[in-house]
Amino acid sequence: MRVQTIRRVAQCRHISSKALGYSRMPNHNPTENDQLFSYTSGRWLWNEKQQLEARYRYFNISSLKKLACDVTGSTGCVSLEKIGEGNYNKAFRLVMQNNQNIIVKIPNPNAGPTMHTTASEVATMEYARTILNLHVPKVLAWSATSLNPVESEYIIMEEAKGAQLHTVWQKLEIRAKRDIIDQIVDIEKIMLSVSFDKIGSLYFKDRDIPQCESVKATAASSEVEDRIESRFSIGPIVRKEFWVGERGDMHHYHGPWKSARQYLESVAKREIDWISKYAVSNETTENPWQYTSNAQKSREAHVSSLQKFMSAIPSIIPKDPDLRSPRFWHPDFHSGNIYVDDKNNISSIIDWQGAWIAPLFIGANPPMLLDYSIETMMKLPDNFKQLDETEKDRLRYQVAQSILIHAYEIRTAKENPLMHKVMRHLQGKPLKQLEAFANATWDNSLLPFRECLIRMEREWADFDVDGPCPYQFSDEEIRQHQEEGAGFNESQELWDSIRDIVNDEGYTHKEDFGRAVELFRGLREEGLNVLHGEERDLFEEQTRWAVDKIPV
Image (tube, one colour):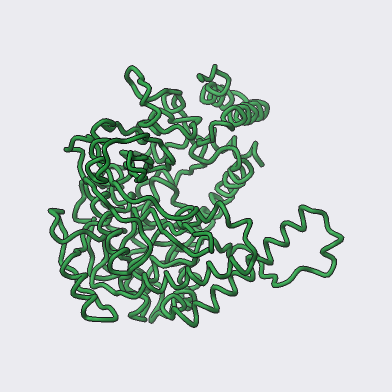
């Protein structure tokens, strides 16, 4: 299977030596503080220079320490330590002379639109903390531009209380896990308790953010509604896919939007507009090992699929006004962003970057702690004691997840009817997938989006719609799609088989870098053994990087 994938890759993609080159950041004389400014948790096998540049952020350390002293009333900063970094941000802990700890979050260049990303995150945290009364760290100081002594955007906040849930989850008894799931249901209910009249990201009302509009909120009390409407506004969405490349200048596609239909149609129109003007047919992806196809490189194929989607939008929007209503949601509500105290009570929720007011049927999702891919099993089998330890671990996990999913769904049905509606919506998952895939067919892959469209046409009657599907795929189009799908699935199987070492962007943890290089050297040898003639010569040249000396 791997060899078939290699052959398809060799046939479909030209890999430039520049794309595969190894580079080190930054492109200047390094200093002792570059470990603070640079991404240091992993490496990339290709496009490393671009990946590191997207995650390199200089800031003025002495000015940051002085600002921290001003904010905390301390006479000095004892230490500054990088405690975490993700794809889009770095987090630092500052220990102050007065024994107070604070956290500084600094966004990478790839975090999203300058000014909007930080301004929206701070407003969102304030909304969650003061309006919804959720356990969210208090923001002590912030800047949405780099025009300040720190020379970078930043958020200075209180340190989250407790321990990250993922550090204790595996040690907890099932009853304690159920208690935490119950708390998550309560938090989800609170987040969905306010409906808005627009779709977009939250901002403070008194900040000069272009395109922001006044917000109308519907809540349990008029006092809460007044507090929201007097302090907050809704403006351009900060989700990164709306700002990639030239999309960052396409402001009429950034929102806010008045309805779910307007939002989805704007997404489709934006991508049609961008692809028609800017897409380059031989540069559909920066991943040199990702399977591609003639359709993936065809502007016409992308535009045609997006037009099909747009024609169906008026029909597939849920009829239930609750499901269409704009609601607030945390988009990254996983165990790394949830903190618990020593009694397993949720004590803090962090990382509100990218949170937005979304149509309920698109935005709301079950907790990431729950694994809905498993088959339900509520008790261990009778022969459990006779099984080997690996199988016992698998079954324990399956039963535990089944119990937690059942507990979540029962409590949600009782306490959070809005979320219960989302979960009972028969076509909720296909609609979420269509929205997600439509945002990036050119940058990621057209095939999953087209698969959703084909399935929607086939299952049109299940969408509670009036009239026939407004588009049709011909038998020949479906045949070609299935043929391309075979190659796509082969590629996915390859990536699934090596995902513990390297992902499909070439990223690997530092400790796995040598293993990842050796793995691709092996794949190269497999390809050279089965390819012949010009095809082999091209593949050898494209993958020569795998045998070159790898810099430290």
